Structures are given as C-alpha cells and as structure tokens.
Image (cartoon, rainbow, N blue to C red):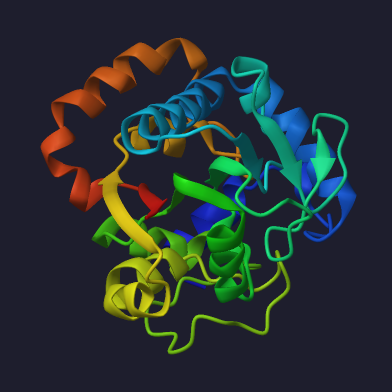
Length: 264
C-alpha cells in the first residue's frame, strides 16, 4: 500500500466503517458528519451560491429549479424555492427522482443543480436526453464535479476504495452501480476530452462555462463527508485567505470544477 493510501485510510471517519455505500445508512451517517463540520458547511454554502449565481447569469425563463443527487444537502435551507431530490428517500428531501428517468413534464424546468452526483450516473446519455426533454429553452444545468488537474488526479485515484479516477475510460457508460465503482473522472471524459462528441450528439445543449473552484484547501482540511477534519473550524478565515493568495494556481491545486450546460 502506498504512503498516500495509508494516510487516507488512517484519516477515514470510523463511523463509516462497514457502512454499505448503496445503503440508506450512508445518508444518515453523512448527514451527521455534515452537521458537525462548520468548515465543510461553508464550502458547501459556496457551492450552492455558485449554482444560483451561474443560473442567474446564464439561464432565463420560468420553470422549476431542482437539485438532483441531493443526499445530505442543505441547499433548500438557504434557497427555499429549490426542490431537493435524490434517487433515495430522505427526510431532508422533497421527493425521490431518478435523474436518468425523471418524473417531470416536458419543458418544465429552468435549472438543475448537481453536486458530486454526475460521476455516479452509469448511463450519462440518459441524463442528457432528460435534460433536452425537461428543460425550457434558455434553461440549463449546473454541475460541480471532481476536477482533473494534477493534484486532484493524484488524490482522487487514492481517495476511495469504492470509486475510481480513470481518465482513460473509453466509454461514457459504466457497469457500476450509482455509488460503487463510479468514475470520478467522468466530467473530464465527457466535457473536456470528448467535448466535440458531446456537442455533436446533443446539439440542443451547449457548454457555456467551465471553471475551477477555489475552496479546495478548506474542503481538503474539513475532511469532506468521509474523513476527519485536519484543523479546528476557527482556522477557516485563515485558510480562506490562503486560498485567495494562491488562486492563480487553481488549475494545479483545484479539487472541483463547475460545468454549466444550457439548452439552446
């Protein structure tokens, strides 16, 4: 076992030991962890704000605003107009919704928001077909996904035993389930490496913005939903200032990026 994997394994939150990643128990444990971590809460608040800001900047028209793959999200607590959904039922969500086969009317949605969920879709083409069907013209989708820069690529390859990070995967589809075996590099494969193929297959959809997020130090230090925090929460302002100082290096150190897709 590599030194990095050893360190990561030792930092794993013990409450997640032996929890099935496809079980409802995972949502409950993740929710508990989320509520205990102020630094991570600040990071996710920035993710939610980014979704709304990109929506306002790039989308137009009237329709529903829906969060997909919400899991333990508190998006709706900040923006009550959001409809929070996931493929699994949870007390903090509005409804169960399968992003690959959505129980939604045609041309009824202004915006979809998805945080770290796209790479869990085993058949992304079904998702894109649903975007084309359900979005109004001028509406769109904001995805925040694992980034593909040098630091992110190295880290994600060693981060989870239940997920992979493989930029060389030839096909978009995978034989994995929604959680186990997901490829965290899927957004790179579809929207960067195969961007021309995406635009050819889905001429109604256009990628209008991609951006690296710059809250990676706080995300890393918070431990996310699966690992223990590395520093106390009162250090958050200092860490945020450090992120600002090294922001020119986001493409090297970034851990997440935003993909904004709009229906023409």
